[in-house]
Image 1 (cartoon, rainbow, N blue to C red):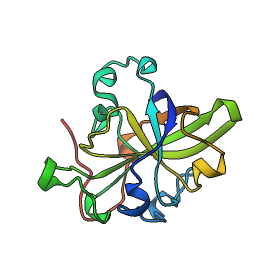
Image 2: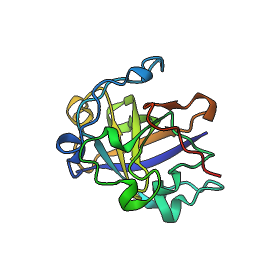
Image 3: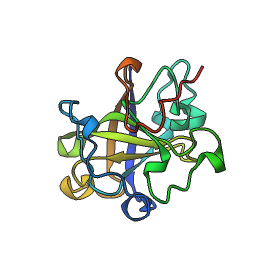
Image 4: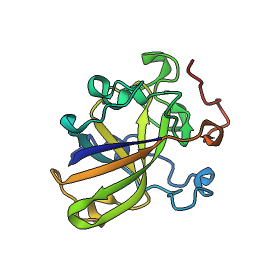
Amino acid sequence: MEIRFVGVVSKGCELFAYQNPLPTTVAELAHLEGWPNSFVQGTFNIKIKKENIPNIANFDLKSQGVRCLDLHPEFPPVAYLNYSVIPNNTITPEKKGENAGDLQFWKTTLHVPDRSVSHNCYMLRRVRSGYAFDIELVSNVHLRNDFGLENGDQVILTVFGENPNNQLNLTAQKDVPQVS
């Protein structure tokens, strides 16, 4: 299954660049041919255009935005990482409940129609994050600099749900949660 979002490049809070650094290499992702297994620091931020949000059965994207994807059994991420791996993670189970702050990675293709750019990366989402209509991307290249992208540039994201049997748990500290 895939979901397509139309949005614009936006400025982020810069937390993942400075306060919440991701691991720079994730060995478990190396077998995913055509998808990055290393990350530059920081996230690339996209504000979803609400008027272009698709209607998809069993997903309340119109009112909840991407929050409805958290732990959704019909749209699992390709990889899942325990919250404790990220230093200074402000979303924790103690503050927001079970699995809060855990990172979900969905395979995503970033399309920039004005520049004929198409690049595979990941949509990153922390479970129970307050962001609903903002998407954070992580990549092996600095998307803003390498593709000359600026705030306000229109982009299209194709986000792919994974077969639950192929999902990667990027830490041995915790099993991937199942939602019933």
